Length: 305
Image (cartoon, rainbow, N blue to C red; front, side):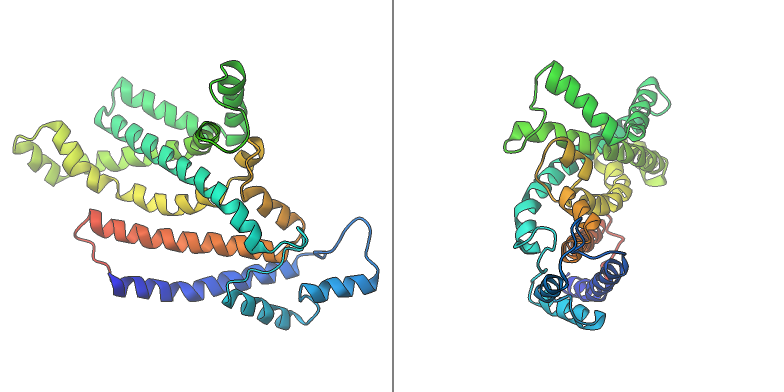
């Protein structure tokens, strides 16, 4: 296990370097300047700003300066949010997005695996069709439609939960559910197809022939194998959810990382965009390693190499 982890971490280094380089190049090639405003700065002030953010050298020098800062864990100064470093912004917003994303991840997995298993067990019956109709509805309704509907129903009409804000468990419920439902629907369809395939395999027929109850066959033998495609999907999903959702965070006035990322791209905030992309890449690589370990734990035929 230790050797596997070391190899994967070492393999991740060139990938992260490629991500950093590509992000830096794309942001530098984008038209405009991080200091473009409605009122242009005098040349002397512009030169001072470029010098402060180390953007006054050649592109190669700027890139090397950036890499040197990254080597020390410094993601740089934000050109949009003056006098704030990218580390400070991420330290403030990341815990919010992580909390929301983790809650949405648990809800998506719980609903998706449960609904998909239910549909597979009652294959070709009314319950199956109803479950798949719900999943299709969840996939078809975009978040920017679903969230306002939920706000009107559960927040305004019935007053069960707050319609916006951040701070407690009650404020977390509605955004987490709205964020999770489309992914839960996708997981449900994936889980149903996988479980149906597993239930038709020889080792399941053998288990039934030995007189095991259908509940034991499904819960003990089939689910463990059928959940493997869901585990593969869950890795990138976790990285996606944990790095924030622009629509949900904007609609529910949640101070997460999503709006910062979009504003940074629009304002060509080079270091903020680079920091968030790097964070997303690290999370994606980390969760893919976790998925590989879970694969080996769930299916003994798979070896970690």
